[in-house]
Amino acid sequence: MRFEQTTFEAWPGEPESFRLIFAAQSFHWVSPELRFARTAALLAPEGTLAVFGNVPMKPESPLSEKFAGIYARHAPQLAGPPVEAWYLPDGPFARELKQSDHFEAPVHHHYSWGRSHTAQSYTDLLRTLSSYRLLSEDRREALLFELADAINTHGGKFELHYETHLYLARRAGAV
Image (tube, rainbow, N blue to C red):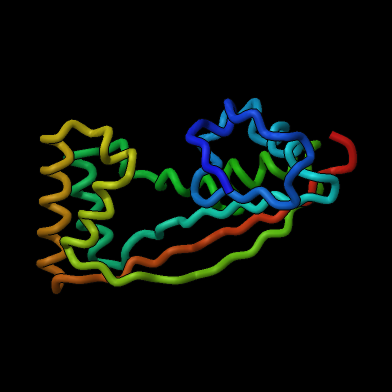
């Protein structure tokens, strides 16, 4: 086994050499012009593309309303649907995959799950996300401080629900 550090777009890869290519919470980073064409070219005939994304849902009331006010004050650009909503069945990924000539009609699977968060675990998670890392440090820390305060006021923990969406699509006949 060997590892290469490169982008998917720059990686040379051997045509038709993989039976399975999967992307976990990352396919939205691949260049739209190459996303499906390059993947299909690397797949063997009858090869499969598997893509999944975890989409966080809004917290339950009253925490969701508190969060909405905090985002409105500190980062209104983050107040809408999360970036991960790209993987929802009515999102851009599903639409693009269905419209791609490189793949047969995808099969979609949906899994619901949740994770209990404390103020610390939730703000630690948010610090890892690109959309939060792009905020100025002052704005990010003010946002995270108020979110943590809201969680602590709410009892110190909450359940964050997720939907995982998995799409499986076989390579279409000829690439």
